Image (cartoon, rainbow, N blue to C red; front, side, top):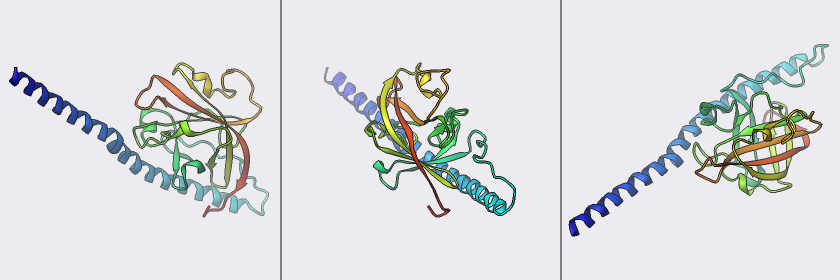
Length: 222
């Protein structure tokens, strides 16, 4: 009996160690991958922004018109920058275009076909809650009135949180142009953030809704 108990204890210890290593990989290993990808996306975004500013300067003083919004980049490329003042000045993520598995491993992903920054409709962004850097780990802390910022080449769009709900994964209507009302024509500019709920589970989705509250021009250094 003593030998059996010793063997069971050793197996339990080994299982615990394996589990600890696995959890460590999920939190640190995948996070390191996302950190590297964010560096590449940041460079990609800066290049896009520099090109956009150059186009605007070239058109200034002429009759040439610059499109109000540049077309969305191809999936997998940098799309915009996401900031949440409540989470501190260091909280900044480059949003990637696309919500596929490979896209979300790079950082928060913009749902293709959803509204762009400041546009009427619903700008929907998905992100991991715990693994791959957990960009949306603290989304459960967001409350009504909290500010979410979206930066583009020349503008910063300020959204204010209006609601936070938990739904089943089948509730894809939360990313519709009018959340919860597919087919309804949008009249306001909205932002929706979706992530898994609870932590370390995909049983539900935590959804944060926000509405456009303002916009301001930004410089290259801002």
